[in-house]
Image 1 (tube, rainbow, N blue to C red):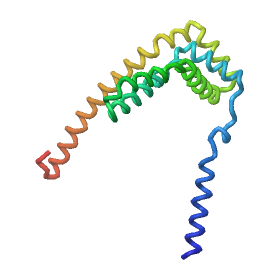
Image 2: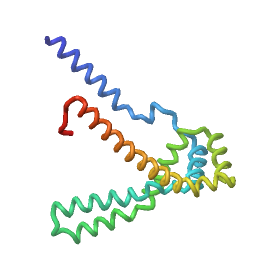
Image 3: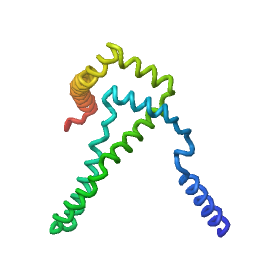
Image 4: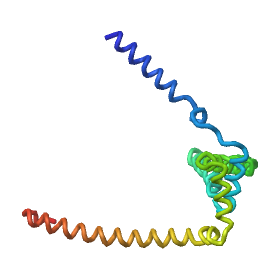
Length: 169
């Protein structure tokens, strides 16, 4: 009984220590040139600032939490908010770097160069321009199809349930 407890405790400790190893160690980090290419690709595609709103959102969220705790401290909370915003440009650059590292980790440098070249072509530019519209139109069409399908399914399910003697449907 005691031996089992000790083995279990050491096993849990071993697993916990393995889980605490940073993921960055497990994956090779992309080169600085790959990150620069990924940044260039994201700038061309217009996605480099996709997460910028998150920075402001974090500040606003925590400001709201602090005000909920003590609304009478609004002046001090507003002052602290301004202080938090003083390094927002540096934070934005750090976030953009992380996004670029994500892309640079997924694609080789040659892939990134090829993608940059492609997005500079007329078709690449058209994709950048039209993809949001196409995505929105596709989403609307898919939702309409799903709604119609849902209606068909419930009609058939109710009919089958009635065949089985369940008239409450």
